Amino acid sequence: MRTEILLCLLRVSLGDAAPGGILIGRRSVRSEAQEVVRRMASQAPPAIKSVTDSWTFTHRSWIGAAFLVPAGVAIMLSKPWLNEGAPLALTFDFVGWILFLAYVSLRLWSTLYVGGVKDKILQTSGPYSITRNPLYVGGFCFALSIAFFLKSVSLVIFALLAAFAYVRWVVAAEEEVLESLFGESYREYKRQVPRVIPDLSLYRAAPTVEVRLRALRTEAQRLWTAALTPFLVFCFLHFRNATWWPHWFTLP
Image 1 (spheres, rainbow, N blue to C red):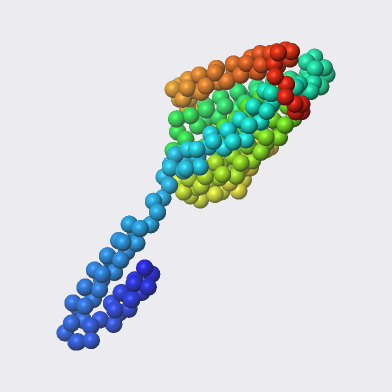
Image 2 (cartoon, rainbow, N blue to C red):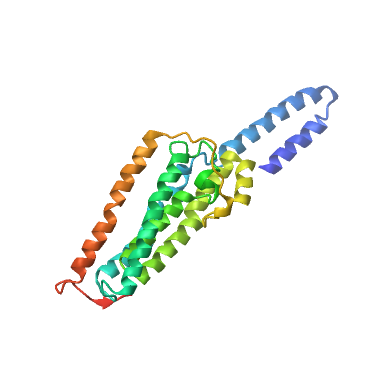
């Protein structure tokens, strides 16, 4: 295709061999060059305008399921390796609650800033001043909190692997869209703020925050459902300690 354009430009510069046909030749060649450019534009892949155009983003739930579902099933059928009430078990619970509270706080805090305007406004203050992806960080905290509530070292490892996969593919796809939308402003933001691990020294509060109640209400409903998870986990742990529960192996 580039060769066709170069040939067209060469013909425009040279014109027809006949003295009287130069103008006509240039006009026809110019039309031909324009047609080549139109064909190139029609064959070019469409630019991603929204994160929902990314296949990786729209199928992100499968990434977490691929890591966590097999590990979860294995834990359900394994024998507890820690006695409830033991000091180490209590430590696991304590860390689990810290991570769960971090999840709730980050989700609500981030929604106050970006709820309803994601992909429309580049937010760089509040939670977005210490990490570029506070919503994902909150999600990672949630997955890890469940692993700690279950006292499962194996699930902690798989949750970290799932988080790595999310950062490698899902977060990268979303940031590619944001960079195409906001250009140099987002590239400068990337140079200053870490992608995942928060840097509290960078914190910068916004002078004002416009709260969008619909987005906040939606997030509150999601968090209310998530709040049932620790209760369900502790119910599962109670039943898993029963003698009738299938214990096929021991998995820390």
